[in-house]
Image (tube, rainbow, N blue to C red; front, side, top):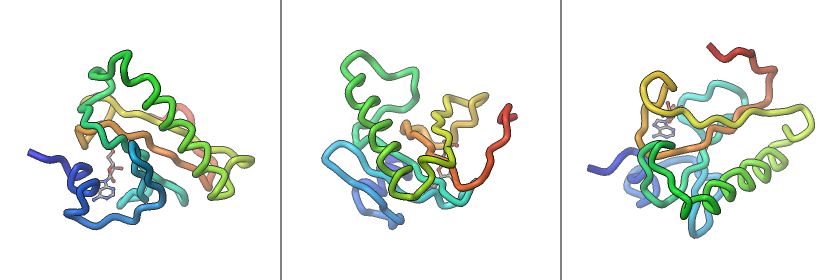
Length: 113
Ligand code: AMP
C-alpha cells in the first residue's frame, strides 16, 4: 500500500510543494516544528535509512544539495538550520518512505530529546 508520501508524489493528495525535479520532491511539513520545516523526499521508494545501498549514494547526496538550496531560498543559510533523517521507532520515524527534514528559522535545542 502506498505511503502518504507516495500519494503526494502521485498527486493523489495535496501538499504544499516547494521543489521538484525528476528524482526528488520537497514540501512543507503539515505539522511544522519550526518556522521553516520542509521534507525532502526521493521519488524512489526506500522505506528506511536501513534500506539504502551504494546505488543510492548519489540520490542521498542530492537530497542534501536540495536542502542547501532550500535553506538559502528561505534565508536560513546564515542563521542556521538542521537536517534530520529519522529511522524506525526509536528514531521517531512515522512515515516509512525516507525523507530529510530541513528545520530552521529559530534556535533549535540540542540534544533533540
Ligand atoms: P517522520 O516522523 O520522520 O517519519 O516524519 C514524518 C513527517 O511527515 C512528520 O513531520 C509529519 O508532520 C509529516 N507529514 C505527515 N503527513 C504529511 C502530509 N500529508 N503532508 C506533509 N507532511 C506530512
